[in-house]
Image 1 (tube, helix red, strand yellow):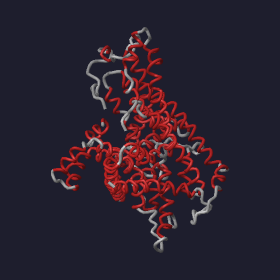
Image 2 (tube, each protein chain N blue to C red):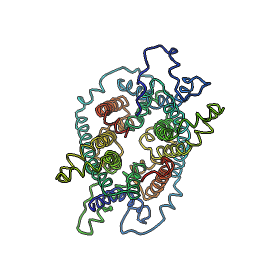
Image 3 (cartoon, one colour):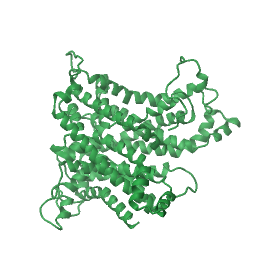
Image 4 (cartoon, chains in turn cyan, green):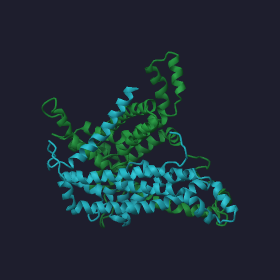
Length: 258
Length: 309
């Protein structure tokens, strides 16, 4: 039994060591990452003056919010149809949600680049919105679909038998119960967009880059601990989003066994 | 995945049998099929525009003789699909890519299986929940930043060297090597493997293991005759979902491999960002997609059961 704990501890050390080293180096005074460690907040100060990284960070947040809003709307509607209606071809439609998740992003990203170039859609913010929403929609359908399975349909039927219209019954009964799942799905979609690099890399234009794309070009060109500082903020940002998501998406079964 | 509906539309022409499409819970006033269509159309139209049409266009592009820029006419050719014959170095790169995928998957599978086993057998309740969250949390953070973080550890005079200097001299830095790429990739996909193995192992009844032990089975026998066979679906889905993105990776080999980090992924990226040979990039992308789809098709049964669990 003791052996298992040691092994799990080693796995956690392996998973978190590089992340913690990255974070620590953002607070180290040396621009060449020299040790011994000398505490400094210099790089966070420099970051505040780095137009390129700040703009890219702002772009990423705006893109994440737009992606979350659009993907959550589209995905919730689709989840309602896929879970509450029965129709021919439903399994096929569910299967079609997998390619955006399962095909390596390199393939999806280069395919989007070719298609957007060929149709004249081009690159830039609008192209990134199209791409990110497509990558996030399947996750929204899964999260909202899981939420819908826990809501009993007879509640809505009860409302209708008491004279409610189907639309009103949905808004008065199902939607409020479903709201935590929808919020969770939106957070998830935001995280998917925030963490996306490969597809963004191919769809960014010189005038519109996201934070990961900007970080990548900095890594390729030669970087300073400012990159560690912004990476730390990005990691903490997506970790908090996912932890909040985990709270919302937890199935609401009272007294669930641990 | 629920499987009540047949995957393909029946032979009858559209317009007939629409009444059947009406689900038991669909609104009464609006026809069921109209509501269903209205709900599905936005999402699937978007996916068509953003994913399915692009994949189809890429397929067409892979047969063009050059990137269609300007007025020059383009012709159709099979040349790019002969790249593996005409450009011999691609075979070596493809082989290196598969080897990289193999090692990453194998290391993830071994570590992931035993980590999941330790979670199931040695932890419970709140402790287990916390450990699971801690293990999965990095998986949902930026992959690029996590790969970058390894350069901090592996570079000369980096964190690893600092630890080494406590006991020895010189440098054990191995940044810009194939093992560095595999290490970064294992770091990226291990959480997922632990999760799929955990889901498979948690369903094993303790009584089965106790019965085996009471009949005199050693730990090794329990492992090879009970635990591994019963965890196989988790191991296989974890392996597929590690191997597939790994053979399509390009940012990890670039950052951690430097000059030795040539993989199919980096060659494809080069065609789009440096060489500007889109048709060759498209044909290589499509070849990779064919491999990926073949892997998914081979293991679809296991993956479906994994998804249902």
